[in-house]
Image (cartoon, rainbow, N blue to C red; front, side, top):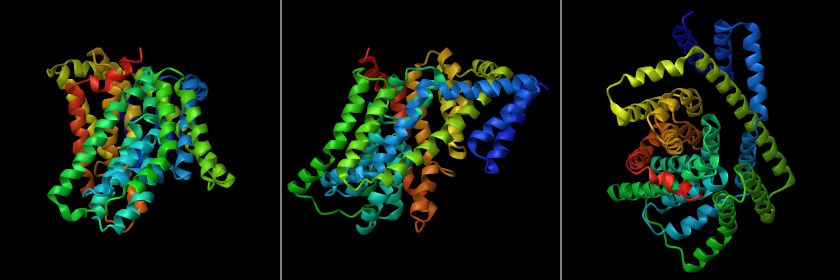
Length: 433
């Protein structure tokens, strides 16, 4: 069978399996194995499957993932997110939409410990949604702010997506992690500006709350200081080269555990639950990676990256036009496809094209991260929207989607800024050398 036609069949099988609800890792692994079986033979396909599984499991850089995951699990269980939200709210509660802005700021700070957008959205939903309900916020506006803030979990370091991107593209993981810092701060400010604009145009969605006095602000800030100190240790240690990403994740996990124990409400049973949950998530991620790596091997053997690169090279769009086209493809895919699958399946195809055009791999990693953020809240899918819908079943999903558009626009603005001024992402990593 012609490799190009075979690739279409394999992609069709992938989408059929995903539609039927097959787990993502196996939905990629089974079609890829069948494709390799057709291109090669049973012995070679089995050998490639075994080698891919072994190499993935023994990759040292991937050990950073369970460390980041356990750090986020412990931080969430220990209530660190609540302290960050209370600190932000103490300084912002007197503003119209202050609770929503506090949710965004709290999400940004918690992202610097958690590294997962779903975990960030879940924890902030538990903390902030009850308060926004009590303050008579419009529920679409409130849940939109939680979904928007949740996207920051994969942009601000530490970020599990940055680790995966670095491994998949052979790009410095530390550089990709640090490159997300300034864009993450800018996106947080854009989200806050979006909230301010919406509440000025529609003041009925967010009443003004009572201002906190200086004693309350001081107490909330002091309660959050240990978490801030942990963030400084992690990001500062990575920036100054004191430790590697894996070592930094380990330090962060230990620091989160110390803060959890200091809270005294963190028990041995909760720790065991966090470890079990981390083991489950790690197994899921590694299964997905094994399936993705095998799928990528199939694409390479079938010659698809070279074929697609030839198509893009023949387009009369120029360097910027190709980039805009790829961004548009990612936006469309993100609206209908699982974001992790989208990244794992498209990077082997689009990354070489962009590198040949002279784009910086670290810079594109941040562009891709923002596109993934958009996909996680973009209708008609938007995984974070469904996560929040599950936690707030009384809120119609169309109201949640109506509330996320300011954050989609903010992400689009950040992408434009990154294209115009690449140093927004590249300046901080360049100062590390």
